Length: 239
Image 1 (cartoon, one colour):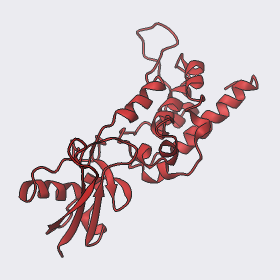
Image 2 (tube, helix red, strand yellow):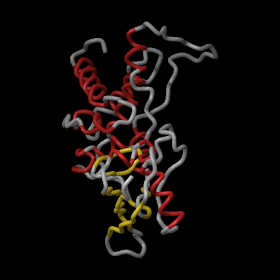
Image 3 (cartoon, helix red, strand yellow):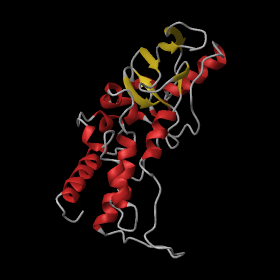
């Protein structure tokens, strides 16, 4: 394989006035990922390069970044599919800690606002099971693969335009999963949380969140269902 030019955004907020780009030449191997190239840079060229990663298997969601202008998991993005020039930048809508490593706090702050945990209707020690063929179970199952990578949040133009004053696709999808769960006892309370000034009705349905999700989740579908449930509640209909 031909050598690849990897242009990486460098930035240390405490010492740099503004971000800049540094280019490294890499000799890729077959099936090498972008994350592999970053490790190669650290090992052979610049040990100060900073980025986030953990499992390297596409399961933890830690290594999200902008690669050639698109949000991707670097551990699942093959170098051979990108051509001879690769541009690596930190995810948008997040504060940069250093280089490509970002602070995920805005994402998890939004996640926390939607009351993202199950609240049982009754005080019981027994499991309440929804059968696999139940319609409600099918709605919930589609979205349970979320790995909280933040790629949908970084791709969301509403988050950008409102400077973070929007809950974001992942948090709203999580909220809908719980609202759709007939066993949950906080449905009405949670619905109010996610239809306020930072909630579902602020979504412009651009669809970028759906395009970048590494698990194929469609947050727009969940957001639309939240809007529908809120309208039904307002009209006094069953949600």
